[in-house]
Image (cartoon, rainbow over all chains, first blue to last red; front, top):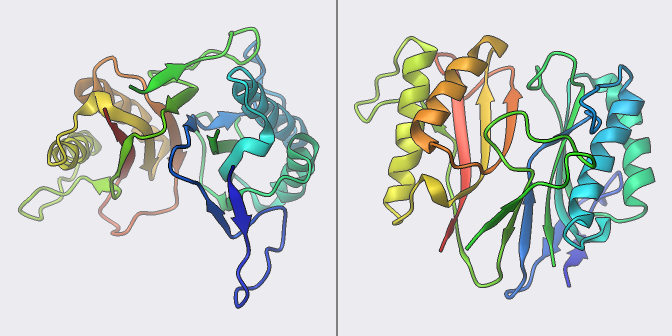
Length: 127
Length: 130
């Protein structure tokens, strides 16, 4: 079981995340490649809302394929190509992760692997 | 032993390059985290081309791993940062040269800059000692 915590003396998280995650010895770790907003058929939707939806859906599907759920996510990194994508990302994150609060980092980058990509989500999970 | 996996392509699109969607690292496995490695030679010189920088960066990465008794096949997660989209192909070529057919989980990002303006690529890895 992963223990998430937020210490006194550090400003409380401003979003759906935790400042720290304690992973006990004896835990399997699952690393995921960065997931983008590509659907299984290879299509990439235009909008950030749909891309974020597809990217988080990919994360959840990959976890599920090994018996894991969003609640197993320990650490998440979200990369977007525009600050304006933040709301779209948060909506999809809430939809797919519910109120789970892993440690998180949100970054605006100059680009992703293909010009049409707007978001990439990478997670580490534990079981 | 790390288990790399990909869900059914009908569920999640198959990886578009030499990487895996997921890696399971069993409890009790030693992990090695490397700093981001750049295209700087041991003598401090930084080559001017992306091809050479990729070559040096991957050589550095493998050197760091080797010092811990690890090899390319032990890499479970790879982060590649480049400063220009045009560097994707040379970085992929270097990756194949140094990692062969090993397919760790990966993330490729184009960033605004690296620690020094002369740097074009940085590579970071997590490896598992098996």
